[in-house]
Length: 202
Image 1: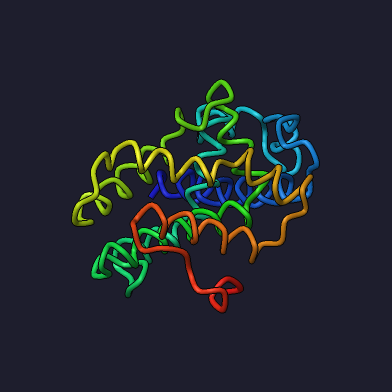
Image 2 (image 1 turned 135 degrees about the horizontal axis):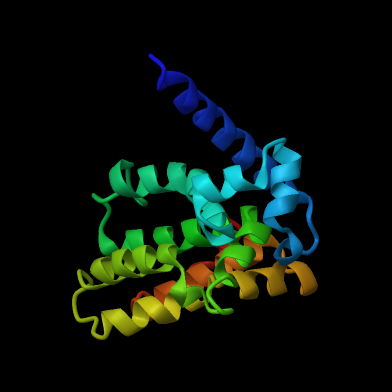
């Protein structure tokens, strides 16, 4: 019984921190400037609580990212086609890349802050390895396709957070246009030719 209250406090504090961090990153024009002290103050907890729960700023960002990503992860691991595991590779590869792009469009500030945390390289982020390994394994199922490891890197490069931020922010490229262009690139890589014009707005 005496141990229950600290556990309940820890759960409550964790939720408060994630909610505060979520709000701050969503509203901030410069997510890289947000500090652990800023987040602790917004959550109404001590800075030490954050370090005990998450280790450091990168750990907090990863926890927030994973919480937002969980519905996508569930769809990828156990959902229906075209995103789920039973989809044929020619359908699943574009669906996976579209899911990554849409997630980063919906979480632009957070994705940018997390990817820039690895010395400015997204390749040091844990989630990148997970997406790359999954995409490579699906590409390996495409008949006649070689260099699946490189192709997975090359296709994921089109969803880098800094590129998404540049296109959606400075270039003001519409969301549907970005999705259609990525889909066209993917189908060309897979050898399926360009998408029909009527499908580019989906």
